[in-house]
Amino acid sequence: MGRFSIRVFAVIGIIGVGLTTGATAANAADPSDPFGEVCNKKSGCVSGVVSWSNRSAAISVNLFDDRNDGSTTVVADCYTDSDIYIPHRTDTRTANNERIKRVLSCEGPEGGIVVVDITLVANVNGAKTAVTTEYRRK
Picture 1 (cartoon, one colour):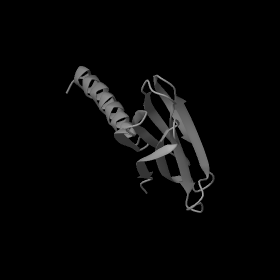
Picture 2: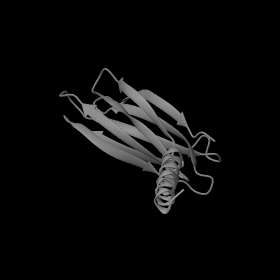
Picture 3: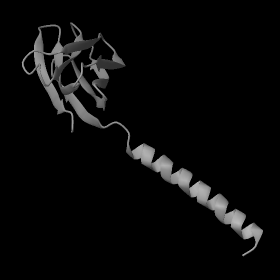
């Protein structure tokens, strides 16, 4: 085997290691839980994804409020292992005669956020529609 062949194998080996490392990093991404569109039949709809990281959860939403009286609010109640009945944090976003994309965030203490409960509110009458409850996978 000549010097040229050794160099080619060395370059291919380096590229192969780089590709393997990149694929491993992509597979180690933080988990996420998408949820489909849910409408409240009064004022609007929401869809999105809950992304989990370290101690926190970020909820990316597509919120739509149709052109009627009142606005539509999406509520994310976030719970820790020790806050089973009372949310550790609540975050909201409101749309008024529009379609918006926003991120709701829940930063947790040590142990982190483990449950996110999402609700859609028709602000014209306060009616609440359960959207989804997502659990952090361990």
